[in-house]
Image (cartoon, rainbow, N blue to C red):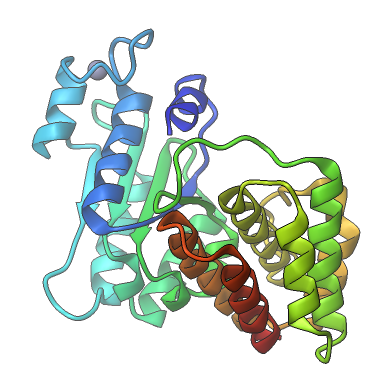
Length: 277
Ligand SMILES: [Zn+2]
């Protein structure tokens, strides 16, 4: 995740993120994000010892707000009181950071309330939703966030253009033709000489783009070169299906990380993606 922090330090920060992974781990990453964008030693950000970094570590920074619940759900009132402070300027920080732990516990009403804020973000704030269960988030929420999966391998490089085309083609085939044989498509993926975790990450970025198109989000499509295929898929599947697909992809990513049988991973993934159509 070094690369991600470097992008932040360079000033490229989104208004909204979903950090996917176990709660403690993603909370740590969210705090690193808050420190990086607010560190007083920009060359070393996050330095960990300046006043801002220390306050964030101690949970005493007035502009880094953490929402967490003990109970079963995050209710609309809790989200509303958080949203009220979105409009206020930061007191000390250059950027306010709102961290919502176990964001999947937000009731649909609470998510809808938050959605309005994500659509019209305050310029000096970033919201980070932490979850290990993306399926419980509304498609409209997901499509407005940059999703970063911390449950998969940290080191990645991009996959080649040919592989990108091939996988987009497979997804399109599956959405257009529900009778397509998942076994033969699984073999095609297994034959690609790419790292399984990278392929899975690419899968998730495509489905996230499908959601962007599907929900008419103003967020940019990540895979611009594949806009055609993405639009065609978006016409065929529901937003809810795309979220189910994302959930399956993240599940198989965990299987890949624990070095599960690759053929089985692709086969199971394609069956699940097909069912999601
Ligand atoms: Zn610092």
